[in-house]
Image (cartoon, rainbow, N blue to C red; front, side):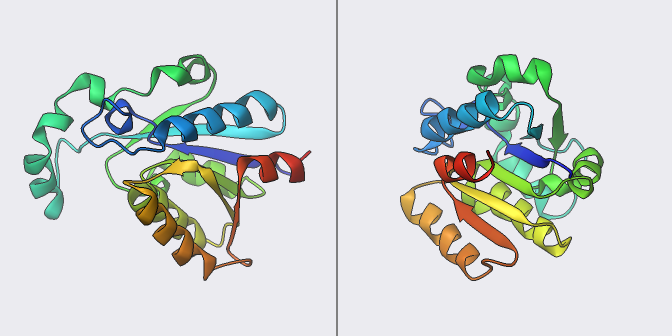
Length: 185
């Protein structure tokens, strides 16, 4: 049987406590992501993604680049969190300039070869939700790790979970990292 794909979305410095776009639960999400990476090594395939602004933006992305120029040009903000340094030496990191990680051809290929996609990362109401919806559109089963995803605040994280609850259990399973570790051993 094929393995799960663990898709770690955009765990970049800009979302940490020190970052301009701080998502308060980022540190907790990172610790829970690390738990999975350390305990499931042989049982999962892992891909990291990051968002970098397009150098040739189209449509509203042009406005996005203007409004967010300071972040786009700040190398530290765009770097992956240091806590994942060893994993980034082991697993691939792909760059996207759209919200959905499925815009990356290598991710599309890996998704199609996987039993299901386990999703973690930031930002819950943006890149994570966009990726989950793209996966659903492709007919891919999704596990959404509620304590390994961070959003702008708890209210928006809850709103995303509410949206996804309407797609359970056929398209999405929401679970904690502990539940995922217990069910897949």
